[in-house]
Image (cartoon, rainbow, N blue to C red; front, side):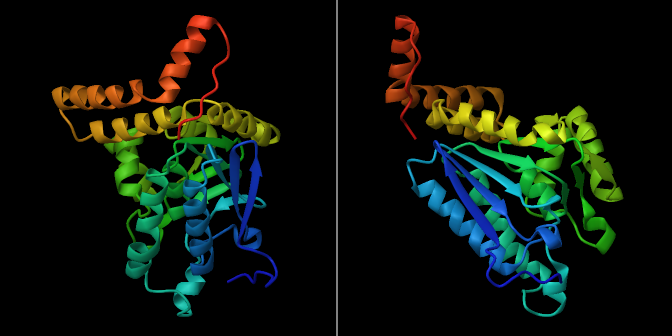
Length: 265
């Protein structure tokens, strides 16, 4: 395991105009997860969820990697639980926490995203990747199955055939290929990643956050519903949103031909 300076936090937190950026900060180890980094990230996500000033979260990595998954050296030396316990105690709660955030979450994938790191990114609402970034379902190479939500996410994103191909081979998938498959939202030149994500996050932060989160929940729920049930769920959500301040503000702004000021969360 690559050493991490004792005075360096494993997670960096930055706020700007309603956008909270969380940066995984173990660059020498490609931001692979330790127990300490798990705890820091979960705590930071909980804090962002509780802070009504936060209207969008960006998750990214320091250095040349996004996240290389679990630091296996920590598992082998006994300073982390066994793999099964790691999944139950850390990766499952993390994947659920991302899926339940009360604000949109953007993954800014600046480099390699491997194993659980790939699925952490894919579990975010929008994934924007640099052209040099890559996604690797590395689990089969060490005798494991995709975790951090990978078995649920991959077939829904790209279909069974592509999902199995990615998971069984463990081959590296470039960002442009990932975009072409529909695995991610956007692939941009490396030099444009920061500006692209910043502009997207600022745009989402100014939009009706409550409605966007309801959209995520409705789409995820609809994967398990028939058409009639999905239509009923849409009606239930619309009724609640229509009575909220943001919808009233949006309609008023539209009729007055002015920019809206959304405040719900």
